[in-house]
Length: 65
Image 1 (cartoon, rainbow, N blue to C red):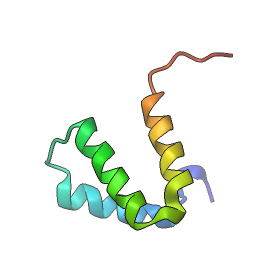
Image 2: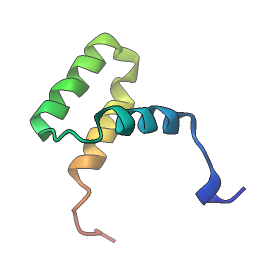
Image 3: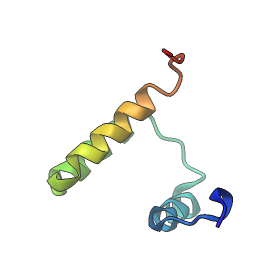
């Protein structure tokens, strides 16, 4: 199976998000608050959410290699 045809379990949630809220615009502040709310309700996801937030924050950083 090629990478292009790989479907991850999270893809379903991402597709639902895009279908339901794809026309909306949100601020990074709003997103940060929703991520905090999610971790408050689901503390077992603290590490993956922290990694995701850090990844988003550094998307535009130049390669340090």
